[in-house]
Amino acid sequence: MNKKVLLWVILGVVVVGGLAGASIANNSRGKVEAVQMARVRREDVTSQVRAPGKIEPRTQVKVSADIMGKIVHLYVKEGDRVKKDQLMLQLDDTQYRSAHAQAKAALAAAQARLREAQSALRMNDSNFGRQRQLYEQKLLSTAEWEQAQNAHEGARVAVATAQEDAARASAGLDAAADNLRKCRFLAPFDGVVSALNVEAGENVIPGTMNNIGTEILVVSDLSRMLVRADVDETDVVDMRLAQKTKIAVDAFPDTTFPGTVSEIGNTAKRSITSTVDGQTNFEVKVVFDQNVPEVRPGMTADVEIETGTHPHTLVVPIQSVVVRTERELERAKKGVKGAKMDRRAKRAAAAAEEDTVGRRDKEITGVFVVRNDVATFVPVRTGLASETMIEVFGDVKEGDSVVSGPYKALRELKPGGKVKKETAAKGKK
Image 1 (cartoon, helix red, strand yellow):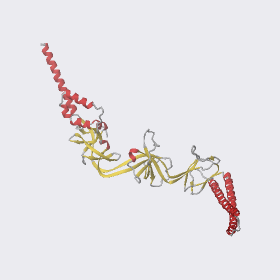
Image 2 (image 1 turned 60 degrees about the vertical axis):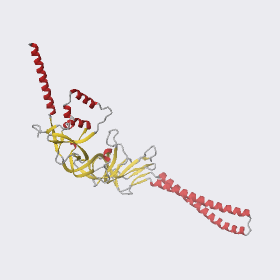
Image 3 (image 1 turned 90 degrees about the horizontal axis):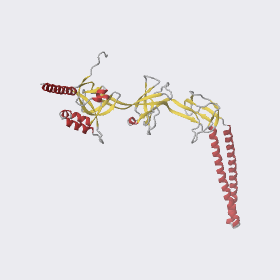
Image 4 (image 1 turned 180 degrees about the vertical axis):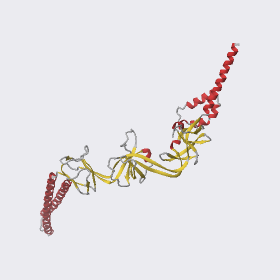
């Protein structure tokens, strides 16, 4: 009797366990995920590129020393406005004036020797002509005629030599005059002395292969400013000259200035604002379209460049676009069939799916379209993207509901899963 009771108890436990397992499985398959939804709609979408940079004048000249000398007069200070050819500073030119005077005297002496040689050649020409006539009349010996020819040739060589000496002396005078002029530093254009790195009495030296030399001052045209921005290599391919931009200067919050792309770098450079190793950027110059007197060189700015616009196109929120692998989509299609498989077949199928050595699943871009409370994965192609919306092409139409969040739900959502619209939490306004 006790054995029969025990048998009935065991059978009861098995039946109850089976029913509980079936109930759990049904609940799992019937789980409804609360998600956020958005509508597919048509609107204008504009793609933009953002990049940090530094402000500097569009035109600036760094004035350096070409000769060695001591500053004896400094006529400007940092921030002064200067006119073209205005004298800004003067070096001690005592030695250079002396060298110029010596070169001038050397040229005068060379020219005097040239005149003397030319005079001797003229006299020799007259004498050579008479000796030619005598030789033709057989009144001059051959030896005397050869001597006359040699004298004439020597006079011509003397003139040529004097001409070369005069040319060399003239070149020396030009070099001395050039060095003398380099003692005076004139403004290259109308502008502002944006940097002054020396004081009166200091010595300046020219640059060499191993020494950059003395950078005396910088003259800038502050009427036209630009931003040197570092644009990532993935964004620079979409940029073109003359594209319109918005410039946000950190010193002027909540204010933007219009600008235009004036130059796009052809060679990659190291970022001036990022410390990320291996980051490849290209320098892009953006010119302010208007004069902003408050903007100063060296300020930090961000540029927002419009790289393209598509009007009245289908768009969805950027976060709605997700990626799934072919294996995940195939697994979702076989979900019903897999539920009918026995335990051994399920283990075999799972082992086959886990065997991914040497295999790389193809990734497919798409969105989850909600139809009859079921999230259906629809492959799409993407186009331009703004800050919040992205252009899509595929089997979607205006007015379709797509899953737009939350992030965890989008990450874990399976094709064919049941969903419902997320409701606001109690007490949340």
